[in-house]
Amino acid sequence: MVARKKMRNFYILLKINQHIKSVRLKSLGIYLLHLSGKRYFGIFLDPVLACNLRCRMCYFSDEEKRKSFSHEMFKQEDLPRLADAFFHRALKLQIGCGAEPSLFPYNKELIRLGKAKKVPYISMTSNANRLKEKDWRELVSAGLDEITLSLHGVTKQSYEYFMTGGSYEAFCSSWLVLTDIKKERPDFKIRINYTVNKDNMRELGDFFSVFPAYALDILQIRPIQQMGNPAYHHFSWDDIYEQYDSIIEKLRRECSGRQITFIAPAKQDLVKEENENADSVLVHSTFFYISPKICWESDFELDKDTYESYAKRTRLGCALLANVFKSRKKMLTTKKQLNYKIN
Ligand SMILES: C[S@@+](CC[C@H](N)C(=O)[O-])C[C@H]1O[C@@H](n2cnc3c(N)ncnc32)[C@H](O)[C@@H]1O
Ligand code: SF4
Image (cartoon, rainbow, N blue to C red; front, side):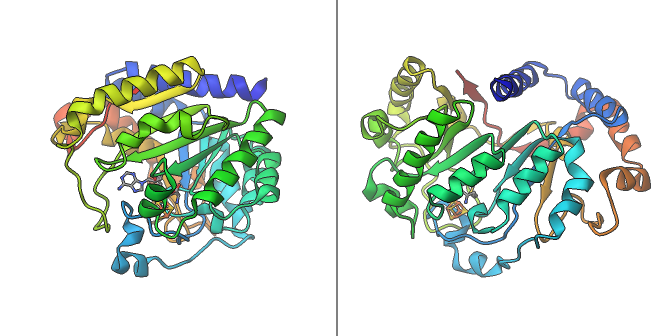
């Protein structure tokens, strides 16, 4: 019941955020939350910098890039320090961001610390190939609120083609275990992140006939983005553009009939050129990326600093307040922005 309320509140916050257009107004909100000691940011944590797969759309399929990943991971004794430094100010803890979190042996301990510090929402994003029933049960018992399973193909053939090194059976087996866990813990959320390209889009039409018995709360269609120099680099939508709406509308109807939240970008956004927007100011203030290589800001020292001591030392409050008065022109950066439609 409490978790359901938290989940609802979290998505309500997202929707409110989508409706407030003024970056300065949002910056004022962030400044006030900082000043009053409230929670206002999300922690995006890669506890280990490695992956067991080499998905074709991902930079892990680029041998050079792959080699540059250090396989570093947090030590178990780093975790309480991390929790003391940040968790009391976090709205969300996202485990797994740019690498594979299931390779980290202390996720259970990490989640427990998050719950002890009352982080409202703890989520993990994974390819789900490594973990077994016992592992999943431990993570959910520790307090995991949501799992996002990454999927790059509906059929075994395209799944194993796009998720190189992955096993379709291992993925389905994890999803079935999570389906069972959800029967016992209905508040636990299961989300699928389907990274879509022109070659795995059509099979989405069969999604619910292939996966009829699997529990699902949120289905997000995430179009391929150019991240580094991956093995698959067909970024054009030409072949599929005209069919996009009918495939998406069918999914939207099917999700609606099953009370599944459906998130997908509008067709025109797929081909939108980079445009100027001011959101990077907000992203910088609220997106705290943490890995064994970097802890939020490059001069943050985990063995000495906490969020508060660092904020005092660097006059973070002044910088946040300055955002409220920045002209729109000064905030503008150029990037492609996807407007996701949440139903
Ligand atoms: C980089 S992965 C890291 C977390 C974990 N290893 C996983 O795959 O779930 C984070 C997300 O990025 C997605 N992704 C991978 N390559 C992508 C691309 N080229 N464009 C957009 N999303 C991509 C994955 O499907 C996954 O949902
Ligand atoms: S998408 Fe995730 S699972 Fe696939 S290679 Fe990238 S980090 Fe690994």
